[in-house]
Length: 360
Image (cartoon, rainbow, N blue to C red):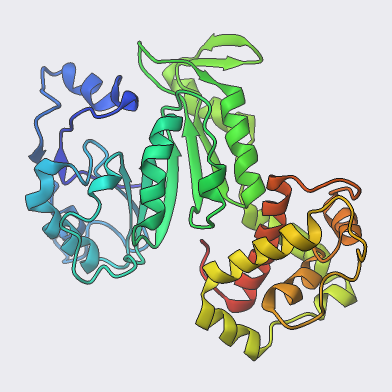
């Protein structure tokens, strides 16, 4: 995938910056990484070849500002022009990773509105403090596509409060590279993966890092093996694939497959918004499905009257008996918070597909 570095150089602002790969690489050439300057590739998105075609081809994912931070103060005078080039190439998708989410609105384009369709913003969180400092703001900003990147992962992180918003599309985790790399524990990775599964959020284990702890044993892993070893773990998670399998099974049921959202349901969703419907789903699951003892289990979900009710019957999340049969979640005990969020994720994915809404 192409990389576009409109400017180079950065300043360290948090623990994740301690062993920055940019500083490490620049030091080999006697270069001061803290000096921020425009690069010769500044106008790469709009550059053309001799035939007049764009050098960056249509539909490519462009990793942006990988040797700096797109929102760093020194780039305030250049960012408007960079946004203009991004706007001029709606056929490309720009991925922007930042530790400076607090500066997101500085020089934001006037036509940004809820966000450009061709831009994904990734907020970095290397530890719990950074997650709690950055993510509440991240969720409130006008961003159409949001992801989290926990790299280098420096400790356990509870992302549950943020993933439950339904606004995070994916989480990427990875260890730290370099001679002075801090240890990454596989248990931290697995715990974040579990959180993502519970909330129906994509998860990617990118790399082990140089110093990797698994089952209490520490391993030093050469740079060339850090990405392949992460792939070999086979723990990446894509809810779309999981939902496909579930919905294929549900489609074989004459009862489940007969449910559809009505035009009235669709209009309700358009008027109220997906976030409101998700809030309703969370409330219905908490009150009607989560208790250990439900006196009217099997009859607690009306057949109509709300899009969520229809979705519950379509996805077999309408009672504890169906939840056990179709989803393997046993009755007789209270649903955990993650099990409740799983049920909500199934419901909202069914609604999304009925409405042909984009992934969120």
